[in-house]
Length: 130
Image (cartoon, rainbow, N blue to C red; front, side, top):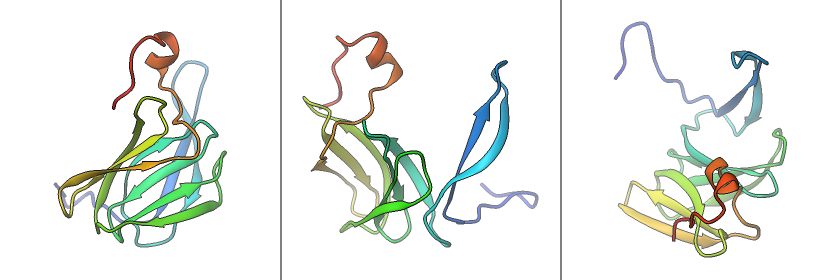
């Protein structure tokens, strides 16, 4: 919900914070800019460090280069409102995408596995989704 003192502006900016030694959030900077007017939603990293971001406006996924900055690739989807992305499957190379406009979950083969989550690194015996 929106209140008079807050509003969501679809800027297309992805921000990151530096985390201080004490755990506080410190310096804020722009990780990537996918373009004005883009409402960004769910995101995940692949094992090579690319950030895959669902844009719930325009039906696109943006693939940001490792370390941020440049958009390497734009993937146009058949649904106008993708809302989330995650990796799973037997080899963690399946990218799952929730598509809110048509109400489905689609899956694509990805060239590298998804980045392992913290729990998967600590507990490698925990299976991934799929």
